[in-house]
Image (cartoon, rainbow, N blue to C red; front, side, top):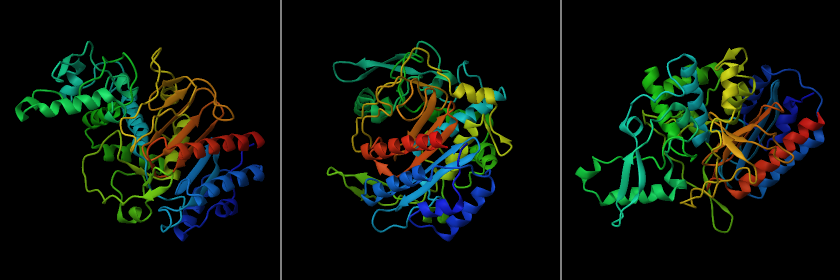
Amino acid sequence: MIYRPSRRDVVKTAVSLTAAGAVNLRAAFAHDRVPAPIDRTTVSRIDSMLLAATRAAEVPGVVALATTDDGTIYEGSFGRRRLHDGPTMTRDTVFRVASMVKLMTSVAALQLVEQNRLSLDAPVPEIDPAVGAPQVLEGFDTKGLPLLRPATRPITLRQLLTHTAGFTYRLWDAKAVQYATSIKQFTPGQKTLITRNPLMFDPGERWQYGTSIDWVGRIVEFVSGESLDVYFRKHIFDPLGMKDTTFVISPRQQEREASVHRRKGDGSLAAQPMEPRSTKQSFSGGGGIYSTGPDYLALIRSLLRGGTLDGTRILRPETVALMGQNQIGKVDVGVLKTTAPALSNDVDLCPGVGLKWGFGHMINMQPIAHGRGAGSLTWGGLFNTYYWIDPGKRVAAVFMTQVLPFADYRALHLYRQFEREIYALIKSA
C-alpha cells in the first residue's frame, strides 16, 4: 500500500506555510485518494534531511514531491526562496525550470505525430536552412576559419527529439565554442552567407545534448499555427491543471518566485539579482519557462499513468511507452564536459550506469542502487531542478532548488538522498 501524507503531516514538514499555500494544499488533497498506512519514521527522516540541508545552506531552499499512480506520497517545502532574507519556501513557489521545458515540447511534438501532422522519420519541415539544408562543421583551416560541408542525410524529428541531429550547446562543446569565435573574423556580408547553427556531426551519428528541442518548438509552432505558449496552454497546461507554468510570469507569480543562487569558491551560496519580468512574445522549446513543484508533478504523473490524469488524456499509452524506450540504438549518452564552469559542472547524473535517450528523457539502463529501477526516465534544468519517472516501480518525483552551476555537487547529493528515502518509503508501505 502507498501512503499520501495527511494535511497535518504536510503542514508539519514545512518550515512555514502561507495562507495561499494552505488553500492550495486543500485543493490538492481534494483530488487524491484516501491515504494508506505509512512508515512515519521514514517521512520524518526525509523532512529532517531536507530541513538540515537548508539550515546548513547546502541549498537555499527546496520543494520536493513524489507520486505514485494513486497520488502524492510525499511533499515538503524547506528553507527560503532567497537565502537569509527571503520568504520561506512553500509548495507554490515559482522556479525557473529551464531545460525541463524540453519534456513539454517533446509531448507537444508527439501530439502532432499522433494526429499525423508530423512524422518521426521523414525530413523535418524546412522552417529554416539550419534544419532544411544543414551544414556540418568538418574542422578549421590553418587560419582558424571553419570548414563546412552539407550533411550526408536530412534531419528527422526522431533525431531532434533524441539529440542525435548534430546540434549542440556551446556550454558543453568546445568545438562549438571555437566555431562561434572563428566567425567573428568575418565581415557582416560574409556572416550572412554562413550558418550560425552548424551541425557538429552528421544526423544520427552520435548523441550530444544541444539545441535540437529549440528547433522542435519552432516546428510545433509552424505545424500547429499557434505560438508555443498558446499551444502549451491549450493542449498541456490547461488539461493538466498546470496554472503556474508559463513563459511569462504574472506580478503575483513573481511574488512567489525563488531567487537563483550561485555557488562560490568556498562552497557558500550568494543570492543573485532577480531577473526583470519578461515581456517577450517569442518562446523557446528548449528553455526559459517557469513552473512549480505541484505543476510539474502533474505532468510527470500523467506520463506515469500512460498519458492521462484525472480523466484527461494528453497522449496515447503507446506514445508514452515510446517516450520511455531507447530511441538511439547503439549510440550512447555520454558525460557532458563543461566549457563554462560558472554555469555548469561536468554532467554525469548517473555515474557508472549505461544511459540512452528516449523522447524527452534520459534513460538509465541499469538500476540505481537503493533508488530508481532500470528503464527509469529523467532530466533536469540549468538551475538544479530535476525529475524522475520510474515506470517499473510506479513512482515519479520532482526536486526543485535554484542554484548555479548546473549539476551542483551539493544539490545533486541532496537529490540522491531524497531519491533513496522515497524508495525506502515505498518499500516500507
